[in-house]
Image (spheres, one colour):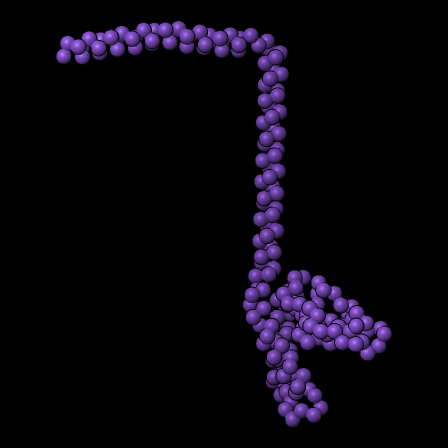
Length: 192
């Protein structure tokens, strides 16, 4: 036990010695720092502060510009999403419209026994008018120059005339736009 007490006393003395030598060193360092601050002349301090203000202004302007760009991009994305919100619904309706068009074309042919009734004719026009009011439009392609951005070529056939080379001869499936965005490319036959 006496040995333990002696060791503890020695450890406490060493710690006191280390603390005593560390305190003057810390005091010297803080004195140096205050001396550095004191060494600046008022003009140098003004220059340094102006530089700090300039840096902070630059950072502020950059953050503000980034925020403005983010806000504008968010508004633009929301508007685009609102414009094309019905795209999925319209895309699902397109095969129904194709079937309706085929039935009308069949009923309008002179050798057909079945005719469109007046009610079905009104319904046909009403569907197209309602979807048109929501921004859906048919892309006309017959006789137009083939454009891979607008058309999907199914096949090429010899052109009936020299003028029809490179143009759309027949439309197999109509193309549609929703507002200005193409939601289905027209499937066409091109003259070569």
